[in-house]
Image 1 (cartoon, helix red, strand yellow):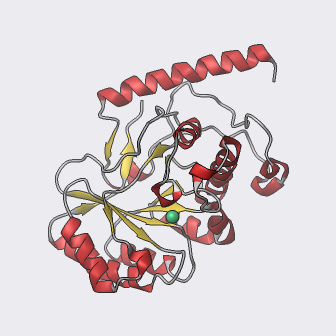
Image 2: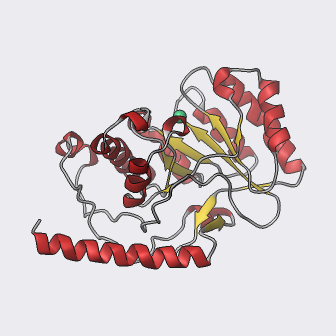
Length: 280
Ligand SMILES: [Zn+2]
């Protein structure tokens, strides 16, 4: 790319980011949408960069995993944050359920079955290598209205990686999500909740907001189904984001716990939904 092209693209990019930043601040940055409109937010009409060219080639780029097709647009570029979002704003008693590290065919289908039984949408922060291995599960998540976020390709500790490696981990995962789920992710979550400045910057460049959590069920420690249920019940409050896992080990407790706490939350008057980034 010629220098002048790069400069004009950067200028457009900055203009887009500034416009989005201003609109986001006015709108409270993001909030809870209602049902599937929130899940299937239309592509922003922001003057963002049209191409998804990497700043430098990566090994992944040389592999035709993503096939062919028109250039892909990066979702509207959010501001570069210094810390992740921990909760969501919404009207009334709203909560968000998130499931990390999958998809895993041993557990994810059961979780999807439970969510479907109660007509509830959730977020899945998937790892690219898991998504590539089980693409049908991302197709199902799309069909059933769930939101898929980026949890890196191989679940590394990002704070130990170079910026180039962080970009590869995140961008490959964006690509496989787009190829399987149907659109690029608008949210990312660092493995172990370990963000650094490069991760925030690269995530924003790839069009994603960093979402952490409010309540950690610690389900990966396999504390017992009842304990997981109790942790969700004890932490339930408006705007709370719950962290659980659908992969990375034996998650049968997580599967069973959802079957208990989801109807309990609904009976308590909570609306379980997914966040929507408000963009113009
Ligand atoms: Zn994880």
